[in-house]
Amino acid sequence: MPHGKPAQVRCIQLDEGNLCRLFGDPRRPKVCESFAFDRELCGESRTQALQRIALLECGTTA
Ligand code: SF4
Image (cartoon, rainbow, N blue to C red; front, side):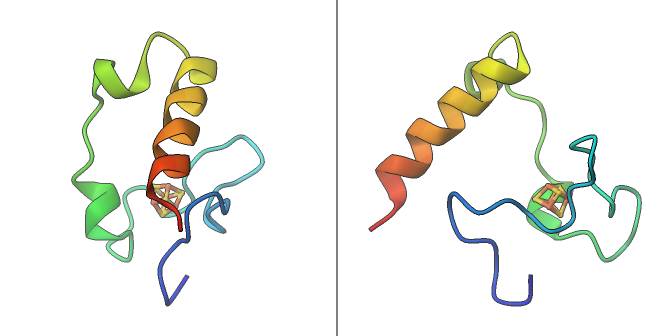
């Protein structure tokens, strides 16, 4: 995604299993590489993480 990933748009690098196709690849964006698991953001499950991220995206889109 040469112009960045807009909020609420699925990254084109996610595969069918929701895994990053660029994991371990030097082309993986630095912002992704530097992200570390954060319990406050991610919660206890994928469902919780998606809900929290969706709320954040709603608060940051025009
Ligand atoms: S880690 Fe980054 S490049 Fe990989 S799928 Fe997620 S947003 Fe896309």
